[in-house]
Image (tube, rainbow, N blue to C red; front, side, top):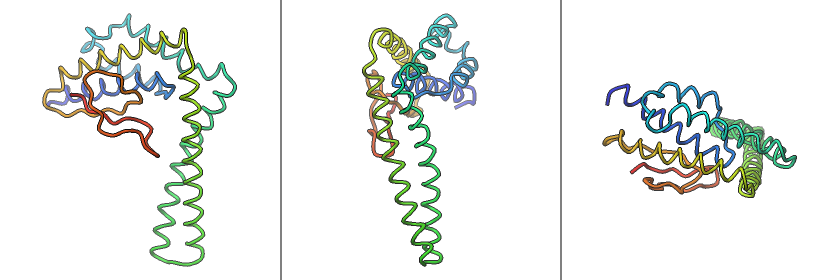
Length: 202
């Protein structure tokens, strides 16, 4: 596969994942989204032209800012971001404490190991709880939010259909928070530390 086609597949995959994430408040950076779009704008003009892209950016902006209109949602959004960051730190601490315990078992190593396990568990629970609060918030939004979600889903589906045409024999996997798309097969479901579906474009 030539580099140009690989880049096209990678960028289309990113756009699909981002559009899907915006539907449930899992927000990718809009600037990165626009950058990826611009790289392949000419290739996907028949799917998402600049006029449609402008409408999508308006929907993206609306969905991103939804929690700012609700104090509880804004709080849970902040907690989710913090807990996700804490998981990375505590996971590293946990690995280091296990390594230290293996190399030089002792009281300090035992304390570090216990602290690493407790902190990692606490951060994971906090992340899971805050995520569910956010998903509940987005799920209860109707009216304009419903129409914006529909636009995002339709664009993601059109890009999935386009991806099926250009991928050839290449296996393309996506990380999606919703599975209401045609042309995808679920490989893995969300779990304790994975809050997305791993799907393959078929």
